[in-house]
Image 1 (spheres, rainbow over the protein chains, first blue to last red):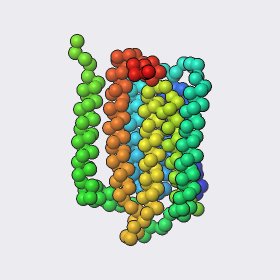
Image 2 (tube, helix red, strand yellow):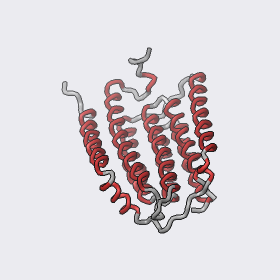
Image 3 (cartoon, rainbow over the protein chains, first blue to last red):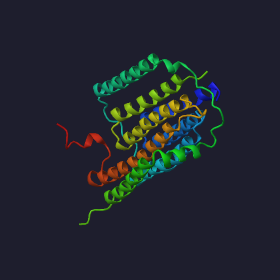
Image 4 (spheres, chains in turn blue, yellow):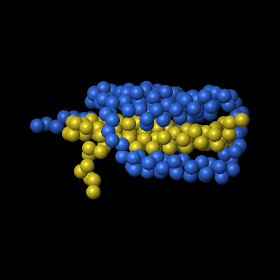
Length: 167
Length: 106
């Protein structure tokens, strides 16, 4: 992937990610999150991870965001009215976030392999679904089944949580 | 050339945006969306390391991508449960603002 495309998608992802936090209207925030996830999916594809890129679009931009928009619609959440911002708390929060970012960037700058570019691949990874599937069902069979149980438990939990209380 | 560090910096910025959203925003649904942003930032660095560590067969290290698959599954389950909790909270209190929920506040 050319550096030009990488920077386009990286900037797109970061800008729309920031829009999620900055937007007052939750619907606009959710739609910004969709664009951010699509940019992230393009970044995954630039790393030759086609399977991950596609499930990113299907699961996040498709299913999860529909869930978010559906809940916003169902609860009829309006844009927040302007309330008095507690500037001390806001400055503290931004300060902690900036310190975290500086810390991570310092770790990356001291990490020697981070300066190297990616080694070439022997062949195309367009068949990575097969490789990931083989790994998933051989080496990671038990975690895969545990995750299945987790999803089942989550489904039952959601049904019980969203049931109306009998009066 | 694009280096591993470039992807890691993008991932760090995304994580920080999500972190700032969780700390600064008061709307519970925006907090959940910021959590998703943080999980995806972690996924990006996992995939970058997967592509960086090319094995003897000349293919990326697929273990990391299997891990990303697990993270996405757990995140989807987490969103479903979180939104169900949000709905039942809204039924009980008619609010999604975390500053209106003060039962545990000291």
